[in-house]
Image (cartoon, rainbow, N blue to C red; front, side, top):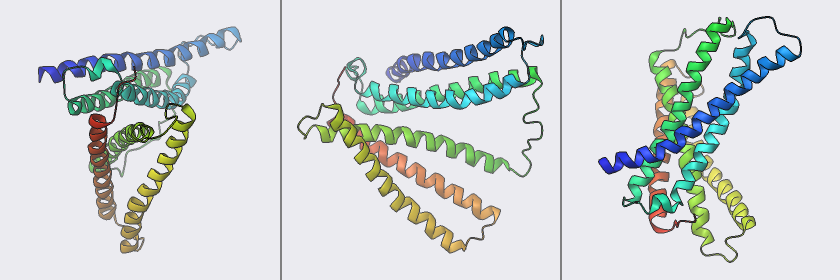
Length: 256
């Protein structure tokens, strides 16, 4: 357990700093916007005007996208880094530690953005969401949606890892495997094939559910469908995880 905690702590430190830098850059952007107000003569004496929240809300979308890509990239680099692969721990522990810290880092980014966003919202007096309401959204539905977002995010990370592992595996049997063009072609082919397989399996399943309900679904039926979606998503995550761990143990070598 001590070994696992130490591994998680080491993996988390780099990703933690990465998320902090994203937030810092986001805040610098807001400061630059305020400075532009001064130099363009639009300064009205208000340090945090109402439009600051709208601007921050827009930057959150970009920050989340950048954060997702960066932690995904960091996630992949760990599996091919000799600094981590040579640690006296099993590949299974390394895999789960890496996924856990990746998710924790991305969650940390969401928490920071939520805290800063709420501060800016109340200080600026923004009315952007004054009419928003949670009426009609049950606690169970909110929990399901949150869980679905979490599962979907983890599914994307495991899918990205699987694609990279498959590329490494296939490349080991091909000439000129180290050329970037070959890797690029393999990336496209594997992604397209994966999407086709995913659509044929998952898509047909939901078509069957829709035809059974004949398009008329009650709230309880929708809740059941969400549970089914969660179950299917979890099944894909489990499948990808098993394949990833196998490929990590058998076919993934360090390159840095």
